Structures are given as structure tokens and as C-alpha cells.
Image 1 (cartoon, rainbow, N blue to C red):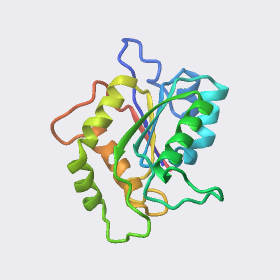
Image 2 (cartoon, helix red, strand yellow):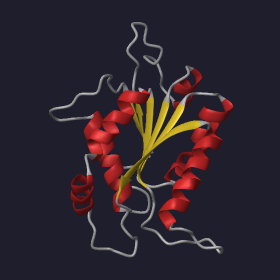
Image 3 (tube, rainbow, N blue to C red):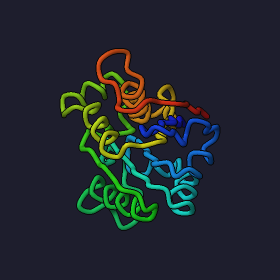
Image 4 (cartoon, rainbow, N blue to C red):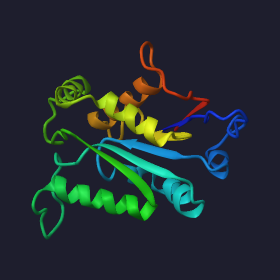
Length: 191
């Protein structure tokens, strides 16, 4: 998991000496979680429960897909379809965390399809829209102080969409050329 500490733009930076996640939370940090699928936010569940619920920090969840590429594990089935069920579950989870939510409509590949690479998924998402532009918009609207995402090299369980979502975060926040975010990264935490 990656945590990016992003200082806000007022003159007296309250995050200048933030060393740990708790330091950001204790100073009221605005927290953004970026993931590929509905339910990926659960990987940061303890952090969200602490920051959003216990401490009352503003939290936002941004999800690239609606989760229609998996399989339905519900005994009652997934009516009308898996993406609709997972979207509703994501909305309910965001409400429970007291977090606002952005859900994009990029394709979710089936886990059974192993031919997909990050590059193939990126090409598919870019054919469907502008995933980096969507993410930039989320960041500009929410103005996070702390951003949580998965590792761009491994994702979670090696899932290529987890990797791509995190890679896009890295490309937007750490650009080599072009777009520069309105506020900078003060610290990057990894685990």
C-alpha cells in the first residue's frame, strides 16, 4: 500500500512535520483512497475506520471500475448484474465510512482472463475515456492531504487493475512532464 502525504496550500503548513499516518489524521487531513474496484477500499479499512469514523476526518473514495468483471459469490445471485450489486455495495461502504465517493465506468476485466496486462488494460481504459483526467478531477475537487492506494508493481495479489490504478496515481502525482498537481507531495509512505 502507498500513502502519499500532500501538504495543503496555506502559508502555515500543518503537515510540515508529519512523520506518521496518525500525525496527518490528528491534524485533520483530508484522506483520499484510490482503487480499481468496489471493495478494494476494504484493504485500507482499519485506516479508514480510524480516520473517517473515530477521528472524523474528511474522506473520499475514488474507484476506476464498477466491479463487473468478477464472479458473483452471493447465494441469492447478483441481479440485475454483478456491476450493479458491487456499485450498491460500494455506495453503502462509503456511507458507513462517512466518505464521499466517485465511481468511474472503466472496464473491469474478468479474473479468469489472464491475457490482460497493465498495458492492455490501460489501452482499454484510454479507449473508453481519460483515466488520468478523471483522477486529476477527483484530486482537484477533493484536495486531499493524504492519498492511499495500492503498490503499482504488485497491486494486491498481483491483480493488473490494482497495479494500473496505482500506476495512474503515481503518474498524476509524480509526473515527468506535463500536468503538475495544484499541491505537492511532502512524503511518501510505503508498506
